[in-house]
Image 1 (tube, one colour):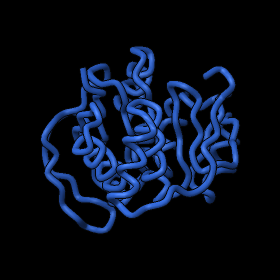
Image 2: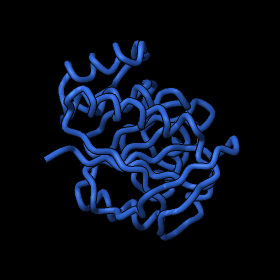
Image 3: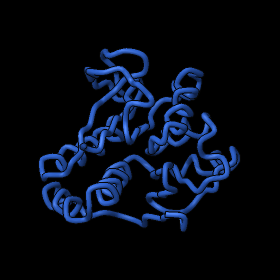
Image 4: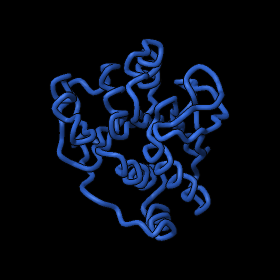
Length: 195
């Protein structure tokens, strides 16, 4: 069975935060990785307007427990103030979904209580706030704490997705994706000792 990955997109989402991971995951699938990626939207399919005005048609509604990995990109703060989304994030993690955050998408995970007392990272401008909300902030590009994986600023979503492919599909698939994309991973991947 392929690894099911959902990327949650919404009005105000930062384009690179979700396109970077989407590109990595798409190339991984083409390279023979057993992965299937779907863009999802809270509550219903439809069109979203991204941070820089790009309009994207999202084909599916988000079902929190119907995936293996959920990636939450950053951008606007709409999701932080959506109690239904926050409840669904908790439901997803309780259902053993690996929840991943990119950039300020990690602040959405924090608002849901998922980062409290756990190793995590986010965009450098939000690290102090993440720590104030109870996250154990690690100075790394990607932080892997098992079912919680977080990444720093905007372009770190590419590194997060490459790490997830390494972890779930193997290093040879990830290396092939790096070659196709002509991208070299940056920074440190910090892993908890419980892995």
